[in-house]
Amino acid sequence: MRIDLTGKQAMVTGAGKGIGRTIATLLTECGAEVVALSRTREDLDSLSSEIGCRTLVTDLEDPEAAAEAARQAGDVDLLINNAGISIPQPFLNTSVESLDRTMSVNLRSVLVVSQIVARGMIERGVGGSIVNISSQASLVALADHASYCASKGALDQLTRVMALELGPHGIRVNSVNPTVTLTPMGEMAWAEPSKRDAMLAKIPLGRFAKPNEIAQAVAFLLSDHSGMINGVTLPIDGGYLIA
Ligand code: NDP
Image 1 (cartoon, rainbow, N blue to C red):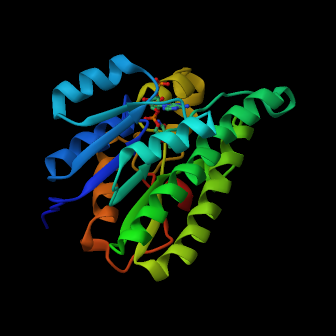
Image 2: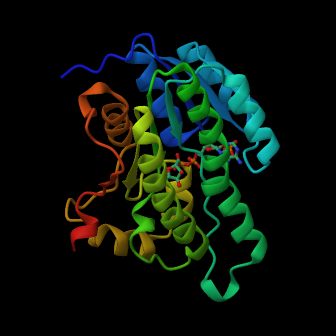
């Protein structure tokens, strides 16, 4: 099965590093025109020189800036809401500021960007496909991740409601829910050997995910090969959630 996204414009948020950068690269290889959004200009400059994408330097914590970036992206056919943050804190020490920041990026920016992109798809009558990057943390409790788990649980429900309301316009909305993935975020949260080994012991395949394993599932969900798949939250977790 070959995924051909020629003629499609794809907007990837959080494309500067990690999973988003890998998605932007793979989608370019599949023929899509990529608009890459992230916060750090240097990351986007180096990505642009590698894959020739358009770039938008934006902080999605600011809803006005998020909306403006979505407008500047133009006619988007494929949207990947990937940008996310994690601020690990025990529940009893979770601050209101951390909760607000996490919700702003991981949930609110998805709403703001997707509304503008979906309105454009509906006006153009072209349909489209949206993939939200959620997490296994939406479905199970992870110690020290109260804000993050809450944000991803809410994101899964947003995915379902988007799929329900946008489906009649030919717009499919799905999420992927990875386990720990070897990116700057994954290494930050799971570097401590005791935490890392305990998590690895719960993954039947006995390893963490590679960014390309997430990107390939995303490309499938964006493509016509998944034309009847709408509203799913797809674990990419080596079996973590079945244990
Ligand atoms: P990284 O931290 O490695 O990369 C995240 C990217 O998003 C960076 O380019 C970052 O830019 C950008 N970003 C973060 N906040 C903002 C913001 N406010 N505005 C614009 N861009 C922003 O994360 P991952 O690649 O690991 O994670 C990507 C997604 O996958 C996230 O939604 C995460 O929750 C999810 N995920 C990750 C897992 C993992 O173990 N890595 C597991 C499950 C899900 P900058 O560096 O400049 O801040």
